[in-house]
Amino acid sequence: MTREDMLARLDQQQGLWDFIIVGGGATGAGVAVDAASRGYSVLLLEQSDFGKGTSSRSTKLVHGGVRYLEQGNIPLVMEALRERGILRQNAPHLVTNLPFVVPTYDWWEAPFYGLGLKVYNLLAGKYGFGQSEVLSREETLERLPTIRVEGLRGGVVYHDGQFDDARLLISLVQTAAEHGAALLNYVEVTGLTRGGDGTVDGVAARDVETGRAFRAPGRVVINATGPFADNVRRLADPDALPLIAPSQGVHLVFDRSFLPGGSGIMVPHTTDGRVMFAIPWHGHTVVGTTDTPIPHPTLEPQPLETEIAFILETAALYLHKAPTRADVLSAFAGIRPLVRRGDSRITAALSRDHTIHIDSSGLLTTAGGKWTTYRRMAEETVDQAVEFARLPEKACVTAALRIHGYHETAEEFGALAVYGADAPAVRDLLGADSSLGETFDPALPCIRAQALWAARSEMARRVDDVLARRCRALFLNARAAIRMAPAVAALMALELGRDQAWQRREVAAFEALAQQYIV
Ligand SMILES: Cc1cc2nc3c(=O)[nH]c(=O)nc-3n(C[C@H](O)[C@H](O)[C@H](O)COP(=O)(O)OP(=O)(O)OC[C@H]3O[C@@H](n4cnc5c(N)ncnc54)[C@H](O)[C@@H]3O)c2cc1C
Image (cartoon, rainbow, N blue to C red):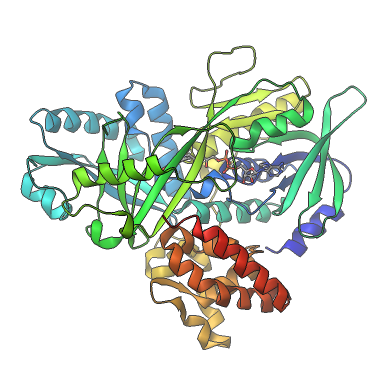
């Protein structure tokens, strides 16, 4: 998968695209996979890198949502549990089964959460990830050696899915490309074109790398820009009422010693009434999240001081060695594209969790939901679009569609497991140059071959693309990522034919960006 190949597909397209998708996050890539695998022609345009928005900044859980269960929203939980099972079945190299423990400190908690989590597993039916169990104090300590012991009575263990969000996104982009879609990162949609009857009939776009402006005509334009959805809607109608209520969530990353076992912690009620997780991820500990309404979405949202303090305070309530600011290796923020409720004039909710909305201009916006349910959301979106644009009907095939890299025992590839079936090809690069087996930095396992592979086969264009999303260095350890940047830039420059000035600019830009992940 290369940019040259994708640009060639763009140039070779004769006539209208069936689908033009704006936005290369989970929603856009999901729609691209669905539409392309049904046999429609598909163009997807992403203004930055694939996954630069919310889709690389999640809690990394493929889950039914224990919170929704508490709220009694059984259909939503069942749908998400089903999707969780389908995703593990179609991308076993990227979704793993993770045990979570709810530590209990009050007498009523074990029976209450014990029962609730039994129901959670029962609702999953044949897609279950494993039985939940009430644990003794000793069993809880065995699973969570760093949990606060004062007052600990025991715990309840249950199972959910965990994944690498940005890696799944790249795999979805590859899957769509294998089904013939043209997908381009660093192409911004700057306008929507209109036919004689005023209906949106394509996009105006600009290649961010070259500055080339072009137009692409399509039968239907899908706005899958998540938190930015209202900006794109306003390209068609400057007075469009907002659909999205953006809300920021922050995570702090620590080293593995804060959560050394193989289980995560789920805190069902923080002091502000939310759910909080501490999870082992890529040899580190991720703790979060928060929920802070924000006025305007940006591509690099900043963690607020209050959010950092809140996560540290909550972690201190549950971990006997309280993490401090000095322990934070990386702090990252993402923006939930929550759908506004209560204005039936502008939303047509197909489910409580996400919205598919068709403006009077004919622009179709699909927003909300969560990573776990991206496939179902894509299926509904394509169904709606086909009906709206009067495209020939074709059945959805994604429930049984293997995602690029599908491999049943990918853990045998160690640190390269996320590449699944591609891992041997990444390793083969070492045959030509054994130095590609070296890590960039002792703090992280990312090897030089991964950066080369990212530039050669995964459309990484900038140092940030490699360090933040192809390998997750920026999200795991921002200082280590800064140290890695010059070597990554040099490797990419060789592969992509860039000069010294490009390397200097890229390293400086990445350093400035990564400073924002250091608290
Ligand atoms: C803190 C947090 C934790 C979460 N945790 C979980 C979790 O554990 N599990 C789970 O299932 N879900 C989780 N979610 C939800 C999930 O991450 C989101 O629902 C999902 O990533 C949204 O994807 P999206 O594609 O709609 O938006 P995005 O990923 O933001 O994608 C939109 C894209 O559109 C692009 N774009 C915008 N304007 C233009 C334009 N003019 N031209 C071209 N491109 C444009 C942007 O650059 C961006 O890449 C979490 C969300 C947050 C914020």
